[in-house]
Length: 542
Image (tube, rainbow, N blue to C red; front, side, top):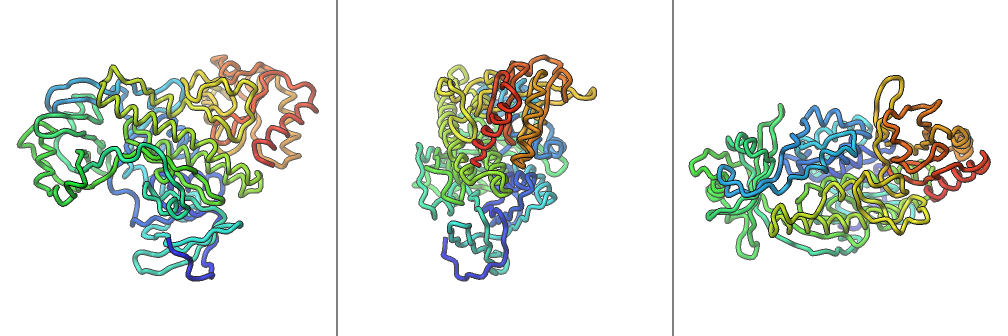
């Protein structure tokens, strides 16, 4: 990163996002849905041309549902069948040794109203781009940031159009580094990394062949293979009306002994045929790439007005398919906090809770994914103890923008999602609600504002919240469940799922995490007003 060569400012924007791939696009969309304009600079000429990430968990689909993009994703790619697995085989057409992913609960769980989706990154990014631009995001492709300077009021950055070399100066209040595992922003800030580091170097061959039925017969979307000619993995990226099926072969290589030049088309096709197990099968070679499988977490996710997300903050093995999902969760956590501060609803201290909440989860996620990779390799299906549903949906923030209860230290960091019952810092539970004969999920109430949920005998909470809403001039949605209420609860499970009585109340943050809870009555209306005022003011650092 270079220093600025001019003090002239050409554009001003609340948030500058450097990197417009999956996580950067997701953040720009989530900010736009909060009414916050961002400028995204992406050095590539457009959205992803290779599949890469190919699985969105149920939790990630909840996030995209709240952003109004679930329908478009499902139109582009239908949810993958529940019976799909990860097979260990001699070759795709050869002997099957075992299924290494019988548990698909991260994608299909009763804890969520939505199902996971197998959409690949080259199909997902255009959908996110369209929705972000429709919502007001300024996306600039073929553009790179070549330098920035930060001060106490914001960031001045120099960006360059890669097509004509022209530069512009952008002034932003906050900047986000979504610029990948080799993040120039992280390096410029001097942020170190910790973790196991490099695990493997791999060659990826993108190709096409008539093997979809072989995958279908194995009920697989991925397989690991090992035979006398080659070993590695094969991944299926299902076709849609926008492109046919695409496949990827990964094999380990040693960069000290070989380079990508040692993998010409002829050798790549031979490896593909060995993986498929049909020596003379027709293979259409598309591209060969190299990449590093690594496990690293940044030592901090924030430096003053600059934040890092996605692979810039944390890289992990693809085992479990949680890399992109974890990055989207980071963007989701940061978006509402930036929006609240930029709108003047929260103090800047709220932004410190992004690192406070997400970095411990990143450490745990990377640790678990590395363990999953090792268990698959060395112990097989019977030795797998990592539960990707717990890792992706069942965590509770140890500290952050919520008011902990007295026994908070006694809770685990991660457990089955249904085991959380409204504890502050945990994900708000999915329960079925009904209004005017129409059913919906409690999850559908969250996404843009804070929400106060109260029990059937919580009329005083409703009145107290209306007073606090006006006094603090803070937008909060207020819903009473059951009784003479906004919603009925056909399953009669709302109170248990949120750990309150009919006279209790709970505050849910815009990202669907519990911010505060009062299990029972809060006394008279004046006392309730004080409780709610204190709770919101504390969470928002007001």
